Length: 112
Image 1 (tube, rainbow, N blue to C red):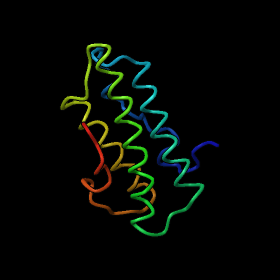
Image 2 (spheres, rainbow, N blue to C red):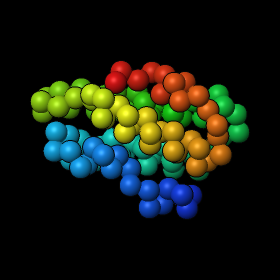
Image 3 (cartoon, one colour):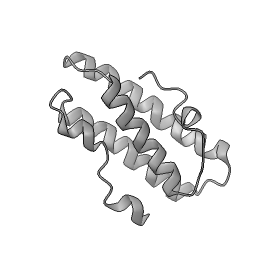
């Protein structure tokens, strides 16, 4: 499946992280795929309630938490720049699908 939302089709996911060599590209790629997967799930499931969206965003957040552990193995981590970049992309995704949600709740299970 590919993203059909025009706002997200060419969106530069995790742009700031890709620009910084502190973050290994192959790990940023994993995070990007999780975000793309979130978009695809939103489009496939068409959630109608905030709770339904939170279920999807929380699953994606937990998956990114797991990748965060891999960053540590490569002398990298989710510090301020990465946290802001990830949060910004989560917020852009939910807003692009018409949801006005509390960002703290969108990424509530985060460990970053």
